[in-house]
Amino acid sequence: MESKFKGRALGIGTVFHAGCASWYMTDFNETAAVAECMAIDEELERADRLLAAGMVKGYAQNYAGCTWEILEIEKDMYVTVNGTDFIVKMDGIVRIGMDVWVLEHKTASRIDRNYWAQREMDLQIDLYLIAAKMLGYNPKGVLYDVVVKPKLKFLDRETEEQYINRCAAWVQQPGKMEQVQYIRTPEQLEYTTRDTTEMVACTQRAIKSDQFPRNMNACFDFYRDCEFLPVCQGRTTLEDDMLYQVRKR
Ligand code: SF4
View 1 (cartoon, rainbow, N blue to C red):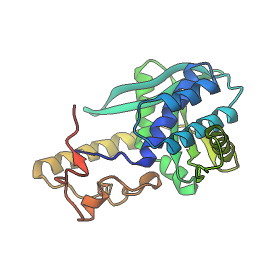
View 2 (cartoon, helix red, strand yellow):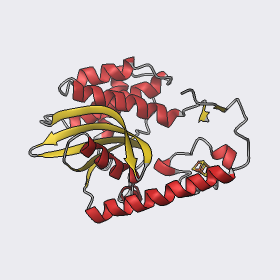
View 3 (spheres, rainbow, N blue to C red):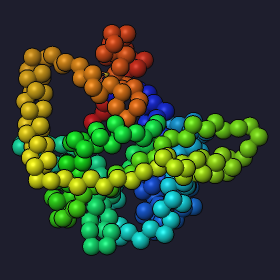
View 4 (cartoon, helix red, strand yellow):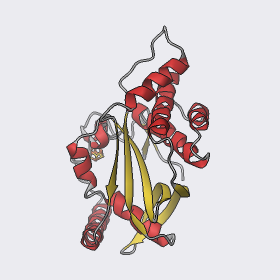
């Protein structure tokens, strides 16, 4: 099942990702990246699209002069851990000096200590590193980029370009854009393998018994409501066709 409404936050994130990918693929061309945000096929209100374009413009300006060698962009693949397949979607793989890094972009409503602490044990990071190794790279770690969504409204008296520029300036303020390096030790990767084995066993048990316990630690991950929150709170069911539909494969 999937939500019929991806939600504003996810839509902004999708446009932001497309703009960043364009920036990397066009040899760090800020104009092309902003144009991609305005062109990408994504259901989103015009003002939110402009906001995402402003975030990309701010990102491009903040990292202007970037000399990274781009090895991969938007790479999707399967990773098998202990006989279980995971879909991994890497934003990119880059070479910086002598080192190879997996690149991850995220948008967030805020960045704080908890946000980074959770990433220390984030399975996604381990899977990225395993995936990059499967592609033949020897990654040093994951470069985790986060940009906070501006809390700025589009004003009647300003042009679209002025709004984009205002958002671009906003994300370049201290604390609105951060980049953290995650390097995993062999012991941490071992924890991941063990966690994965247990997670798979729990999931198989749940499927067998047709009982799926709620994981209340994940309902507000990344500072947004999970799309299935109304179901888990008992306010509706998955049969609510105003909200949910069977995902097409
Ligand atoms: S609302 Fe919470 S418990 Fe329910 S599916 Fe989402 S993360 Fe899981």
